[in-house]
Image (cartoon, rainbow, N blue to C red):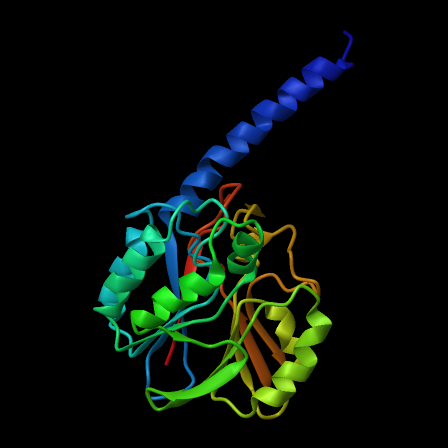
Length: 257
């Protein structure tokens, strides 16, 4: 018996195996939304929601349902609220209008896709930020604010992570530092001991159990809890995607209390 596989048969078998692997993984990735609770004794409920990637009105209704269930004091949108697949600002603005009614404070930090959509001339970032600020959204661009009993800081996206060093040093002390990129973590000072980040989508295409195969973090962060001495970071898997779909990588929001 000839056990050798032709190139065509090998590719066919590989395609079938990929489909068999991806279908249940895709179902898990889309249907499951996990809420991770991070206890810090803050006395304030902060819900961190990175990587929503909204494209159409009503596309991320589960985000609204989550905020309704949690009733947070602060809801922080952790970057990549939209991306270059967006045609108009209608969808993110309607989502923000809804969230504003269900949380005391709504905060936004920017991710790579807000900047890239601006560079691609899809969404004018200046116009978008004006619209959001008019709706009462607190936008933290390399700044900090006293809000809900906390000092919150927010770091803007940078393509080269080495440029986080100076801005993190300049931003001053915070109870919670918000960043889209986890690559801020190596540059935290003693004045910022807790960082919340996203960006990686938890690897997006994973092995069962959300075991990440790859990451888009320059320093190799995937998802979950990281500690370095007295510094702590949690990288949430986020709530949406641009392309491709999530495989064995369920969506994740983070509740810090």
